[in-house]
Amino acid sequence: MLQRMARLTAATALLTLLGTTPAGADGPWQQVGGDARSGVSGIAFEGRTEDGAGVHALVVHDNKGTGQKRLSRITHWEGSDGISPITWNGAEPVDLEAIEAIPQMPEEYLALAGRGIVYRLKVVGSTATVVDYAPLPAIGEGDDFESFALVAQNGQLAALWADRGAGAARPAMLYSAPLTFASWGQPQFGSVTRRAYRATYPTDDEARHISDISVTDSGRIIVSSAADAGDDGPFESAVSEAGRVTVSASGRVRVTLAASPTVLGTFPQYKIEGVECLPGSTDAVLGTDDENLGGYLRSMPFCGA
Image 1: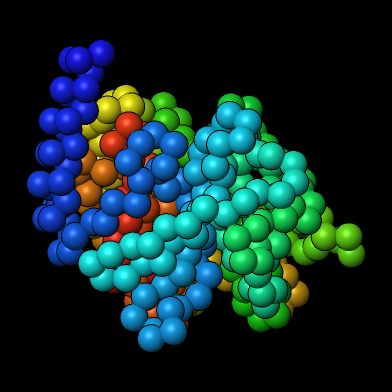
Image 2 (image 1 turned 90 degrees about the horizontal axis):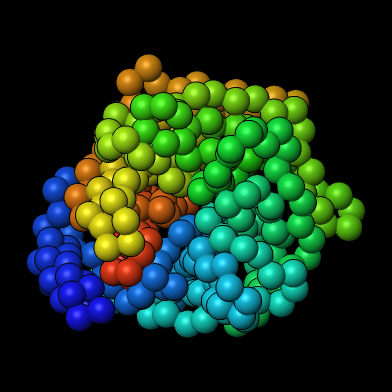
């Protein structure tokens, strides 16, 4: 135990040092959690602060035990972050990995668990109430999901999600489908398409090719990829432009993946599991789940047209 604590202390000191100037980045990370139960597994934009200088965001945690926190609110601005817990009211999920605001539905969100259950939430103040839930369609054998994004174009709504993949042996599988809601609130998915995706970086044997997805206002698909060697790291991540998505007025979803993804930034020592492009902005908020080393947040200009 003493040896483990010493390793953790050393790793945390190294992370603090690297956090000021990680490769591929030009600004500091802010710590938002100090242990394995506080990492950021997904991020959803909630709104701007009153002065417009910061953002309110909801983040999910991949905890599995009864009564452990599933959701928090973070107010993120340059140099500091404020964190407050959200009470989960309803069927308790296991291993939440992504969350996304539902366009044109204030205070409503979809959160995704790793095995493919989508929870529709109403978040008011400090309480998130489960409206309904449903499985993703067309789940493949061995699929393990860490990502979910919504796209609103031409009056239609579509969803993107991905099996994370694992190294050279298993590329990520990016799924897409039209999305509607039943009158009682349940998410309903249309015809599913899928595309294989391999990250350019990292290239470890167990690298997760897609650990989160976000879509810009113009339809660029921004993804994170991540690798870790265990609960104490080391970790490494990248954020890349994977391709584009369009949704026609008839609801047809078309995903075009790049032959060679463009790496926008690399982040040694961090395991990025949350990427959220801010609407009307070039900025992305990045979140990490660094297991025993906690969670970190920062902004980067990855989401321009």
